[in-house]
Length: 340
Image (cartoon, rainbow, N blue to C red; front, side, top):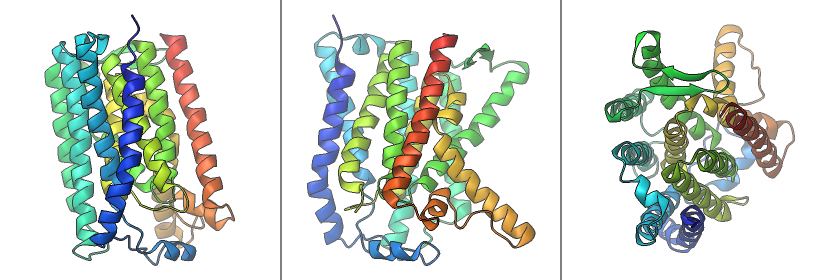
């Protein structure tokens, strides 16, 4: 008997997220939780001043509600996902990933709250944010180690022992990996529909990958994320009625990282999340080169602003970056299939 939990979860997540827009957006307007557009950005973005932010709570609710209903459905129908959750390792991998993403979301929420309510445009300081993110990432990795994660997979190479010898380097590298990608997703959230559209592509890829690998719980979680992203795009595509804020982008960053580790193939996120990586590298290179030479490599960073300054409309940038993400995801999926 086929288990349709993943499809069920995706539909519920989409419906919950999209319908919440009718409630959350007016409420955010009532609270005057509007986005402040910094002067450093493109001048035409000033038109977005006051657009409600912190809308990422819609996606969080979509994922959590759909997962709760989906697994309840699986238990009632004796689905394979319910049976899988009886395995302590599988259950811990799932819950640890969700909790880590929620903690990242909490950091983003605090950052947004300071910006919007306390009227401090820069929010948390870089040191404060970095400390909290590294703390969350470290706690997540400790949980994975304690629950029995002993290896990682590299396509065409195979299993790599991560608890002995040189394999122990995996853990400090993983710490910076989580920190880097969470912030890279945050940097990608700069245009209407960009972060949600790119993450929709990545989530769908993880859905296909985990389904192929037979990891039911992660298949459902990635489906929930895909549905939430699709539901948010309804409100976030240009012209955006709401922004996700750091609340949403940090949650998305935590989620894609959690999915990568849950499939035991975090290295593939470098390919699947190539757009996130390009966005982050553009900022690093821009700052480094400007400090060294006083000149800029890009017209503006992150990279999506460079394309805007080059004459691309927001919609074209979103389409282009989503297509690039799709190419990266296809390559990653093929590597899994042919090295399985």
